[in-house]
Image (cartoon, rainbow, N blue to C red; front, side, top):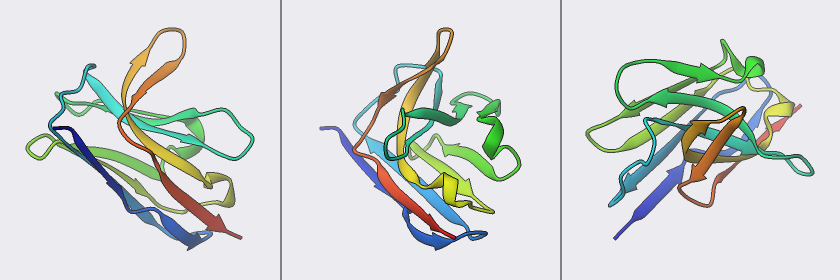
Length: 120
């Protein structure tokens, strides 16, 4: 039985930090890269960060480089997104996903997402 638990979202003031977690049991990633997407109201879902299950190669949206860090724990099949220096424009629903790239980033989403709201 597949179970995905997403946590860590919430309301934070600009400049603050949040750490998102996505724990998946009973499932195996379909791609060598896993990561995070987000969708703000009225906008398309966009790739935010990714990491290879094997090794430490990471990928980031330009606007979050230096502020966000994507990591994973293979033993527990858990994905993390440490978000520092948050800005109001980071407000969105964040989704963990299996990640692939074919001219653009694509995601196979694990769960329902977690809301992140950054107040100014």
